[in-house]
Image 1 (tube, rainbow, N blue to C red):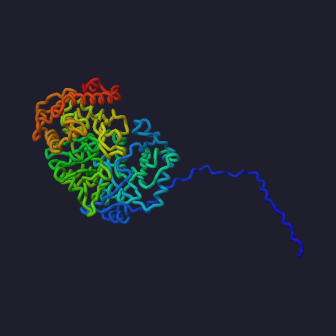
Image 2 (image 1 turned 90 degrees about the vertical axis):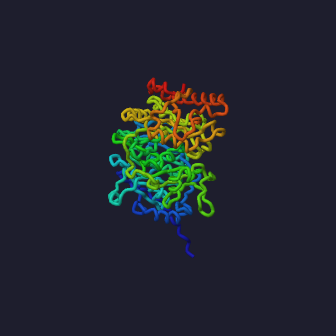
Image 3 (image 1 turned 60 degrees about the horizontal axis):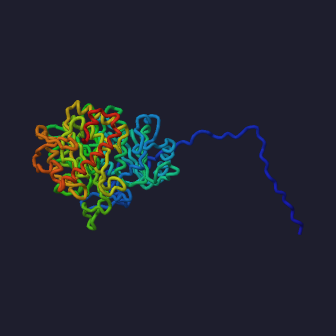
Length: 545
């Protein structure tokens, strides 16, 4: 056999060239959401079908479907951020509530959420915020899970068919509840994220199934945008009587905003969020988000009936084997909810608008059992208690809260406010003065002792006190001054036992009340130190003695 030939290995040498290869410096074109594949603006019945096939909800015998959102059954305030960007940076009150988020990190996370949704079957819903057409904001919601579309349909203002035809969103919310962020790469605190870019008018929400984050993201945005238009944005419910007298009810979740405003004798304007312009008040939403725990048809018939209708969305309610509702159970969470359109209430205002308020009610669920059940405030006291925003943070409304905790939240909703609280307080003071509104402090919390000793104030008593106040029946009633807080307490209220009006008298041990009152007064004074520099001398002197 002939010898094998040796094959020389040739190494290719690069050709010489006088030109250097150019490297493109143009940025990669951002990806966009493929809306052609979206299920857009489906009917409620269609959403039911998609949700059941999706397996994300359970049907109930009365007609609503129930969604379980564990492990998140309340808001996640520590995972909420606002992008620090030029157009809004100087306006935002930065801190623990409005945590800054890097704009480059936002852009990267935005692209990540878009890429995630584009790989999924997703849904969109086009809705309005703000009942007053002068301030109406078109919002587009996008989510990977269908049941949120019914939640949003219930919570916001539903456009007419002709309005949908040419709908152009001013604000967009991208919702990816099953997507987890990477804190090291994405700049978040955990896998959960709620990030708002006020300049681009975009919100990114992920890593949490709790539906309340969707509605509160828009409320946060409006708390920034409306004051720039001269409108006071407020965390309050509103209703009006047949005589046209309008009442506002400020308070944190669980203090009674929804319950007390859903009064069959008065037309409901809205149960949670409102704006106050030069024209009057208007609802920012189009639905109700009521707490269901221990709800009864006897005490709260309007809400109870709405919670048992087809189209309502139940959240984290315990469902019995026969698919009836167990509203007394907190096996999933204390924060069980029902979301339904406002017209499910028996008496509502169809326009979501009303005149200037005649009465303003501050609701505090006092876990210490110290505050009187009702008191009339001077203008200076109104500013003091509005800036203080005292209540008890009730179980379930935030992660980790398992029993009532005394807390102070300026404007009765500082966790949603973007500007310095004094901005909202000054706007409120001006409007109270312009329209001669009466202001009341109502304790819907404990009486006869603190949480664990005393009892929650009976709802029929609270409702009777509020009805009398907003109807003007207490305007001429004599008052007695509560000695620790200096509050003017009516000496008599129709249908309410007089002995419950002054809290010290119904404690088993008056000395224990004195000690508890002194401790709460000290908490008020300590908290108000943050406002002393900007508040007037009269407002500073309006607190507990």
